[in-house]
Length: 431
Image 1 (cartoon, rainbow, N blue to C red):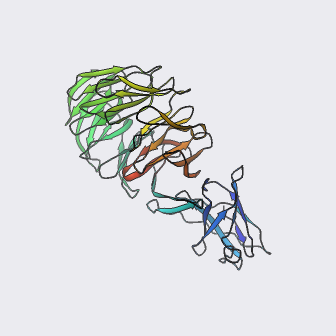
Image 2 (cartoon, rainbow, N blue to C red):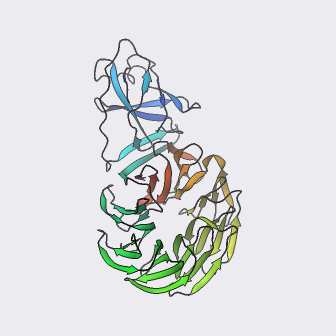
């Protein structure tokens, strides 16, 4: 709960819990919620324990707030693109007491909250494009449609499609781990029984096919959707099964030139042509772990014994391998510049030749919690400190926040945005 505090006088400092305040940033905006006046306060340190001390920009103006009574103000903090819930703020008071603050009205989910930080040399900013609460955690990757919608399945077996303003277009019962979206906007999802559905962008069935049970759609191109059902990889076109190949229990899939590559957690990676012929099969040491990624004719995959492989998408031959000392838990994810990021015993950045450009043990991500973005940045939900950070490609923290909760899934969105899903059911689009 916010407190009502007197902040008149010079040299006023505010001590507050740094939940949701930029770690690297040297400036934070405080808003007097009684009159919506914002003032930029500058932090002079970032001590251990998450407590920051901030000073007003000038001793004669920055700390002068009025609202409820003379010399009293209600203050909340805004940073990392997210306006915090009311927080307790302790201020050196001049004299007397102040009445309690009113409850803050929540900002609508579709409203963008702009924040910025400055270290005196550079400026960084982030925007919350929207927030949606699905009432259950996301079960797998969040897939963007050509119209900018975010499509995902939650642990309570519901498919949600969210538009670019954060409003739900539709929801419907669904199974499997994730949806797949074709270039024409068709959304594919496993039903709660043995059916796979092809849906239009309003959630209305275009076709359905009875295929059995499994992890559902894995990937889609312009002609088919590929799904893992009953231990097989199947291709469906307009509701008809084009072909079926035995492959185990695939959980991830990516479109490759001329076909599809799939992987089973703890198992092999295999690729098939679009007409249903096997291209190749590869067994990573200890089995597959993490995500599948493809770029420029190369498939990138993690292993349960550590490290990632770069495989020729046409032949499955190993181009290179980068080892690590623990299983891959997040990634690989490929940036537009060709850098590959993955999480293991550290966060690694690897170039297309297999050379490690940098690694950081302090930035180890949570499972499924990194995404390289087209904006030239990397989003990383960090394991140890329970915070999230936006990094540049050199591993420097541009901003970080602790407002996002426990992150369970991070996926790249359109136009340099990122989808961040937390265990409380919230899904956010950030840029």
